[in-house]
Image (tube, rainbow, N blue to C red; front, side, top):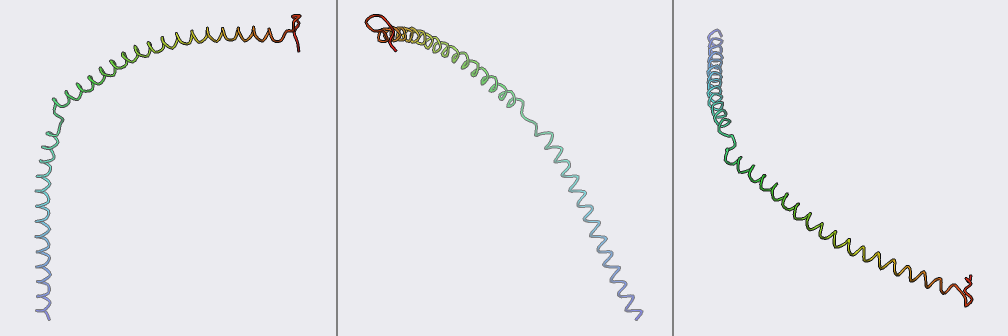
Length: 122
């Protein structure tokens, strides 16, 4: 029985030793991967900046767009002013026409509301 107990104890010790070896190997491998990936992360972070030339072109595109908007605004204001001027002229003509028609209607209404003696009829 003592021999059997010693054999069982030896098996447990061998399993503990194997577990310790595996755990140690995993810790070492994990630390090596951490070291390697940390270096790669730093390298990628340093190299992932935007190229200055692309950034300059992007700003140039923004400036060109702003210029195009300003030019459009200027041209559209000129066009709108011409439209407003034309409409103002037509409104002035329309007012004169309406005033003339109203005067004629008033004169006609006054003429039909009077009898031959010039008295107003109800």
